[in-house]
Image (cartoon, rainbow over all chains, first blue to last red; front, side, top):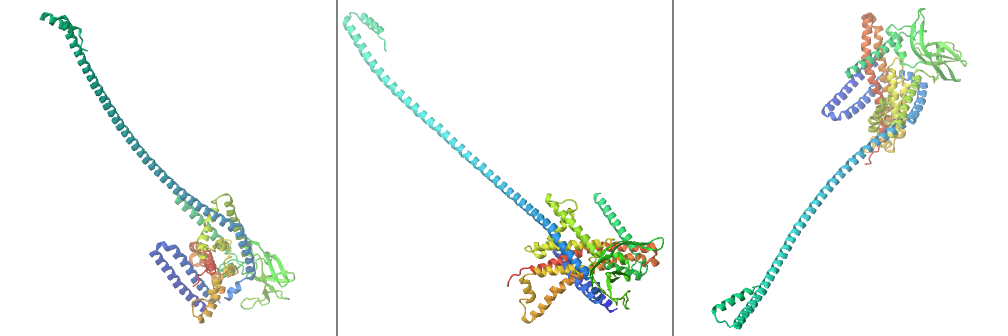
Length: 63
Length: 166
Length: 377
């Protein structure tokens, strides 16, 4: 039960983080469309790191 | 976490490690090395070809510039030559004219001089002839002892008939 | 007109693949290994158990199962060899000797040792025991796990993909001997190779060093991608969802960037320049943990969790046609299941690529950090 709540919290946090990353990346691309390639790469890397964090927490929580 | 460790199969880990090692070695040897080498070769080939084309283009440009320069030079040279030739021709004509003039003047002068001389000589001869004639007439007149005036005139006319005024 | 034709072709292919997948899943869904002979899956608990079973490795390659006219379950499958490192050394037999049993009721006796298969794990029974006894959490009490070097379904998948990759790429390599530009399937593979080299390896590792690591990165990229894609086919592979396989891949990357790291990198890890002395040891501990634990752990967990999550979602959506049969009727439940699983499988195709890309990308990034030459201040 508690770990389900924990999982929910992790998902909330990860969701907020992913939203921030994606939103800022889109803003950046809108501002500088010529840099879209670099922004996408950086976005995917950061999103992957965040994902790793969230998955780590989920798996540790599933104990 | 425990469930994860429970899931973890050491045997599969060992086998996949071995298989992956073999796969990486084989792929590097038989696939990636030749592929990447030929890709790089192709890329450098393309680069070289582009550079060669660029060089050829530049050379072509140079050549064209050279050609243009040569043509210009040749044209200029021709112009110079033409001008020279024209000058020479003009000069020659002028010279010839001058020469001709000189020669004619000289000829005229000579002619005039010789005319003058001839004239002088003729005059002198005439004078001489006249003198001789006069003497002859006088002689014959004297020789004949002319009585009448009529006779005298007749004689003068006869004598004058014989005389040719050369 | 041409585009319209292509679109129709594309849609046809999608539709065909979709129906094969769903059709296959519906036939495999009837298989059940939590009973002795593997019965039908109808209830939510059975679906859950079936998905759990699918996520695990299995010792035989089950294609489909059905109930014949006589009411018996028939499994269409082929057995795979079981290779065990037991207390008496190497023991091999075919997995068919377990008769598809997965809860420890069939005991195989070899070399005087007794083996039972419980939830895709093979246990060696203690001396004198003839049947497996379980405690209340369904753990075997009178047996222990052996090191299982069997050619399981996952190993079979790895072998298959490895051979396929060798076949494809050595074919591409051979093409270059006779022509500059490949034809046929090589035309698809070449841009992918170039993509990995130019978009992943070169920018992250740097022009000077990337050549040494491109082979490794290419192998890992195609290995993960092709296995992810095969996991979406009705063959039912779940290789990249096996934590042992992803751990193996992550440890490979760990070895690569540990052994290629230069002095500069270790200097930065152990004694970070430009910060107060009393912070340096703390930072060194964090950096070492990052190097040896966090980086590989994030790699292995990300891949494992993404693929597992994808499989669970996809199978749960397929299972809608059984679990919601009462509420929506057969047609409604099947239609809903088809529509949802179609959408999810499109996303999963994207995820399959994305996870391969991210694993390779992060590996390249870590390698790049390790070989980067810092300017000395």
